[in-house]
Length: 348
Ligand code: NAI
Ligand code: MG
Image 1 (cartoon, helix red, strand yellow):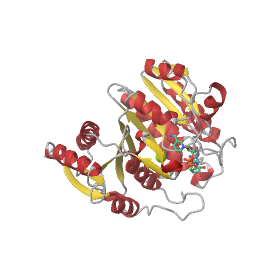
Image 2 (tube, rainbow, N blue to C red):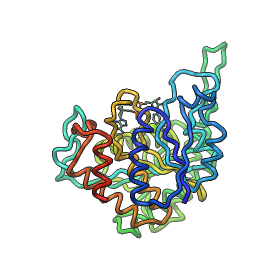
Image 3 (cartoon, protein in one colour):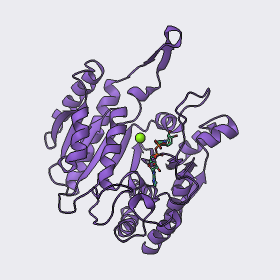
Image 4 (cartoon, rainbow, N blue to C red):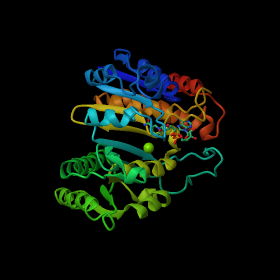
């Protein structure tokens, strides 16, 4: 297996460094190539996603991606390379699992304990459409620059394949023993009647093809509240691009926050694995980023390539470190990225 590693910016290289050590320890035969993308690459080469990087990503069986720092102001020639990679590789399904953290004494930085260990643990997956919607990149200025317009692109084809991916996932989770399979179809079709209206229509058509899987529809605002309040009521949640992006950050709090939230971007025969978090400039360079999200990406990657035993080994080691420490500051500890990585490798 050939894996293209794209560390990116900020804490990307720090957490991907840890993840690569784990990958090397558990699967030494995997061939690794490294490629550049992001703000630093843009400064160096004038391209956030150099053509060599795209070629390397296409040539590999899978991509392990860290994070990139994309400025919030417009920079001529710069476009988010992760958005571009997802579209270039047609990685249409962004799979973002959240398993509730059930550990007493583990609190997120400067917050009260977020999960009551007595309550039902949540185990849900946000399935986010990755190629269109409001992130289609169709933005323009009119009216001499005083009016900004973003087009929200929703197609039958993309809606059908993402909803099908959600129902297939719910079915495979049921086969794996997850009770009460259900897909929650999230939209705002009461306001966005045309665009989310099409997404909803297609989603309900697909739902009817899966009589063995429960389904419900939910407006995005109430979905956000329920994901915060009663995450255990969800199984698989499917949403358009931006709604899925936001909802998965809400949901990930129950699993321990951004430091442990990982995701898979899947297309036909292709895959890119990345932490949900970004480049975290506030802690970059300090060696204290939580590497567990990136390490879980290694488990997802191995699982995707049918190496279930190795994936389970990584997950068990990471779960043991999550339970007993060492922990980075985002989880209330005072250990470093390297301490956590070392502990995971020791427990493999
Ligand atoms: P962020 O995810 O980078 O950070 C949000 C907060 O979570 C920060 O306080 C950060 O310190 C903390 N955090 C994130 N990952 C952590 C980890 N592994 N360990 C400990 N703490 C962690 O989001 P933010 O600050 O909104 O964006 C920063 C930059 O990242 C921006 O330039 C943005 O464009 C980019 N970004 C890139 C993404 C990607 O490459 N896929 C995704 C999200 C943001
Ligand atoms: Mg996000």
